[in-house]
Length: 178
Image (cartoon, rainbow, N blue to C red; front, side, top):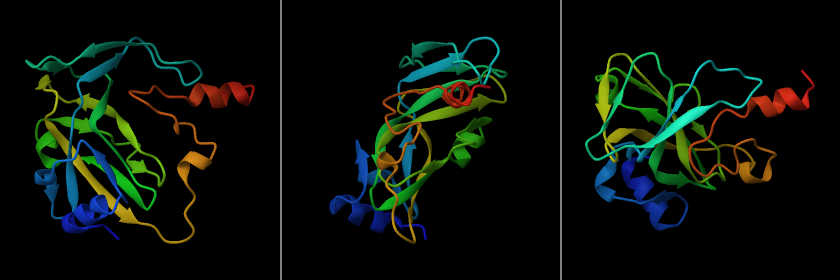
């Protein structure tokens, strides 16, 4: 079940949800409007699941950064979000989609027990300028059924994420001797 905006506000007040920084004006009927952080990475060259991704990193100036089609950008959310009680779903929203930006299509689930600034996967259909702190999507919180399995206590690949993170699939491939 998805929490309503007032339920999200109550859960923040009760300490069950972390959104930092939090702005109550960003609550909508069933979500919280999250913002783009101030850093972008773009992936250089070819991508290979068996090797760490090479990238260039830049701060997004107040005048914005131009996203070009055909490149994969990794960004970060402005907010750090999480909950031991609720799971999260992070998505782009209509306003970003209307600009031809696809954001965070492949990994929208935030597990219970995982409070992070999200690494974002960003693609642009046409050249488009983005700005730090602009609204970039919606975050919903979901009630979970069953015994919680806290993400931090699992051997989770991204449990220690602290910023923009590249794919760590190469660790699994190395460990399997492929």
